Length: 369
Image (cartoon, rainbow, N blue to C red; front, side, top):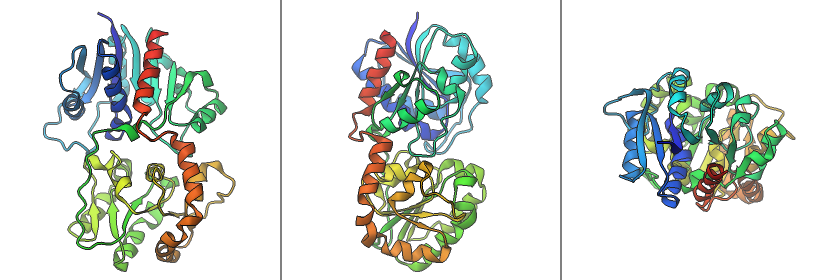
């Protein structure tokens, strides 16, 4: 029997809030569809099956190389099967699937390299101004779903047909399974989130990260959320030991492994944002609040659209200027509010929670086409 739609949960934990809401919306709107949900590990299986429950026509299927992780924290990034061998073995199993939906680019190697009758829908899971849009796999998708018109224009500038791009708003804003992190600080202070980028050439972590955290906690003026991007922990193993040195403090909330790291809990809870070029700032700015950005390499960023996020707050180029910038961020915030609203709207589009339904309709349109 031919499958109508397949959803591929084959990647990192952080992809789940960008993909699951579309699956949820689709099966609610079209319960008669035959839907396969392919999962790479027992963690993916437990999360998705637990949220969906029993639904007629929906099958949870284990992808080739599926890994049983036993007891595994839901938010901790799982060890994944080797992706290219997985896809090579999965491709024949998708042969009779009409539409395949994913939130990562790797799966697009199937339509890019192999003959397939399936139509692939790719959800761009990132947001902001530093996304990679040059990859040739992007053109292999029958439809790409993006949050805002800005991203459609950027993809068109890199050769993607604008007619093959659907603008829906920010899908993750409609993720209903957020864990709501339990922040229990010893004293009531402004809550500051530090979110360095995971790529070394875009990040403040390797230059200033540990020293910045040390200055913040030494000041005694802030409660700090230290829950960096999962990929940073992979790229910089010393982060885990550093986080361990902060554990047990009443003024620091440390998290490297829970689902709250990826579901938007911390960007929603913080009062102030400290970062560099991480796209987490865009989620933070769904509700405008003070931001400070670290620029240890003194980038010539004015006029560079890749750094549009830095118009949302003060940019610090000297570590000695960090604490003064944080301390005046609230008072200075009115200067940046309009830039923040504009950047968030251009990057995320609609954040009212309707994006999953719009994305589901876009998938249905591909199915009917």
